[in-house]
Length: 282
Image (cartoon, rainbow, N blue to C red; front, top):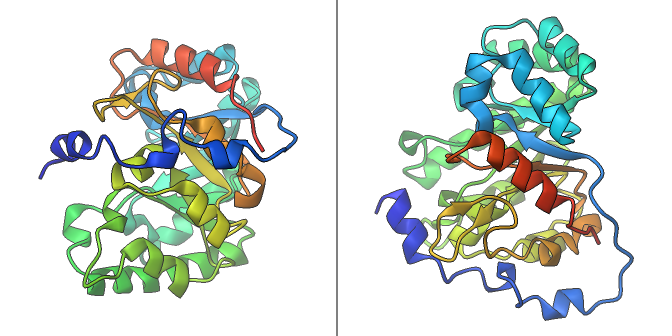
């Protein structure tokens, strides 16, 4: 089953993440506040970034974003990119990396870059299909994550893991996501929760927030249409207020809007920012 088929076949999953179904959560009396440090995962505007990094970051700031999450530096030096951020009043808490960037001496290069950038987290973006065929592979990755977390800690950083849907496909009744959470301690690995992919997997964010409080400092606010496709924030059916009602318990501090394949990167940035401004944190 390809990703598009999976999205469509699972459009009805994730009951508590769909509008109007979070009564138990929202019924609780809580003080709420808006998000004052809205960020964006720059993969969303990769065409713009490839064409003009300086201009793209200026546009991000003009829309009102305060934080950015990188996935590439396009061959620029850390000091050069950091200067661009400073000029636009932006901060980058996190960088997305691939598995090979955590291995061997590659990890130390990422740590050095992140330190110069003033980042807090080195975050594994995803695992390619060839790296998620068995539980044994995931257990081998756990050893890599353990080392990455230990080295990040030594440098004053944190290692984090960003989920998709495939971590919830079980092997003999065991889900890799749960195995990783149990096998690797919180002081070694934190989590960046992607709300879209949680819905695709049919999982409820608040269940993980409750079971692993404080372990989710970052999230991707990515919306989902009624037919299961990605949507600009606020134009889909995910009940972000219901999810973010547990932001304090989850430990959420950084909120990145994202869309993997926006039809128009500028419109996506503007629409998603304006609608994220309306969200409330519990």
